Image (cartoon, one colour):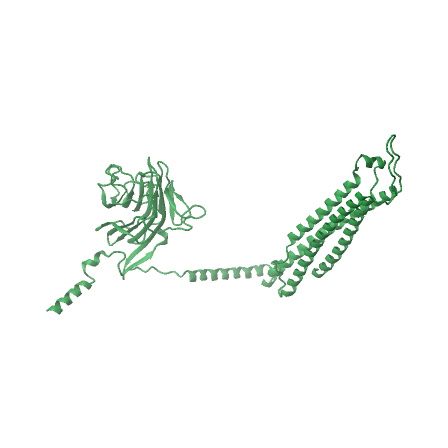
Length: 512
């Protein structure tokens, strides 16, 4: 008898037709779960660049960003809502909402609501920002105590068949299906709510936001025999009153639930195969149009290989850029040549003036004045020697800068040649070659030379004091030291220019 009794107990415990299986929870074994992306949103990129949320639409004072949807901001008398664009095509579902209600006051208002209704609600409705007399389910997260019973914040489930008005004065306590007292305002972590509807059983689980453990849920309410309409819309709404909170929703994740063996397999469409077929049809259509065009225009016929000449390859683009850079360098060298020609012309003018006034004697001293000592032509004083040394140092510094510039040009030119030799595809590497930097350096060097020549010209044309004017009545006298300095500078510039020009021409021949 005893083994038979144990066998009967085991059979009853494992009998799938037992009434205990009638209300399976969604987490039970054997329930098929499928994520529904068209009824969900989550960060990042929650909202697109144009502000829209894919598969959702929002209005009122709601604001969507890439990380969250602020259904109602912390301003007085604000209302907003966000709804799915399409109705559900499944009977049982599991929705997880991650939200945060924060405010500066000790008491907040008004609250947030989850909706599952046959029709979309308004965006500025009287019930937490949505419409009254809804047909379906509403989960109210009420943060303001309207009935003054000190029982808020409160979470309640309210069913409506489309004919009842929400009892605001009593916070819906006369209409609620079930509820629980939970404080969800100003928590260190976002609050989580999990709403499950399976086999006419409604279950609401709450994460109080006091820990970062996402699975730390506790039961808030459970109701049996709940009959919700099919093919409804999901929505979230919020509202503020005289008091105001920020109502932010971060995640809205929807999962459809199906009993084991009862999953209606939808016809699978192979996107890859479909796209391949469409592409093949497009190719056939394009080829047919090409053949027709060739028949209608036999003189304009070109093979596919001929079209390649209209596009430049990567190597051709690199060579074109090198040629453009070399052309810019050649233009600047021609500009330098013109500037040097101007300098030589000024030098010849200065030499002619010096040769014309070099033999003139100093004027006689003024009446009652001390006779000045007449220095022979070509005599050099101590001040002239100091001036000569100063000019010589400046000249050496300028020569070093020019030499450095020419050396940099040579090094970069050698790098270009080396890269050209080692690259089998004629692709010039960008390292060691910067045309814009080279041009800028040459322009700066030319500006410095131009400024120096301008300064020398000013010194040659400007008077050097009353004594000098007295000693040079014509105003065209030039000192020996200044003349020698200018002459040496000009000769060195001409020599450096010739060396640089010869080297540049030699390098240019290698590229052309």
